[in-house]
Every structure is written in structure tokens, then in C-alpha cells.
Length: 74
Image (cartoon, rainbow, N blue to C red; front, top):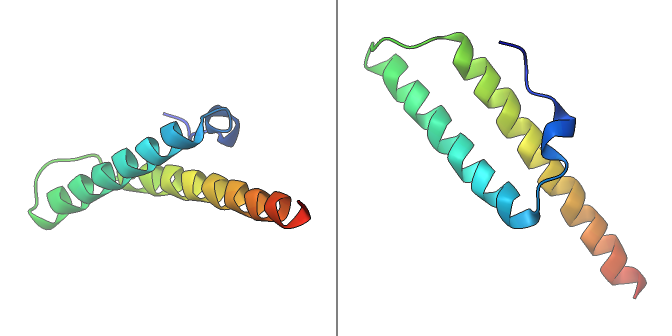
């Protein structure tokens, strides 16, 4: 399984982006919970999910900064 690409998420709308962030945070929580309770899970999934979450939050930050710049110009 390859790492997720940033270009795959750049086309998401703001509401879809928020939903994906919540979904990814929940997925990361579940993986960490499985690790803490010593359940079977694929350990590489934690790294992949953390990377995806960072990409989603980065995109959100970029959009918020662009929104602030546009609103200050007007």
C-alpha cells in the first residue's frame, strides 16, 4: 500500500474536508486503542493515517489563510 497523495484530497470541498478530518482522527484513535489493548492490527497503518491527517489539516490551514487574505483585501 502506497502513501496517500496530496493531490487526491485537494479537490474536496470544505465540508467534505471537515468530515474526512473527523473520520481520520477517529481511525487514528481506534488504531492507538488497539495498540494499547494489544489487539491485532497493522502497525504501519498508524503512520499512514497520521500522514493523511497531517495532509488534511495542512489543506485546511492553507484554505483558511487564503480566506483571511481574501477577506482583508475586500
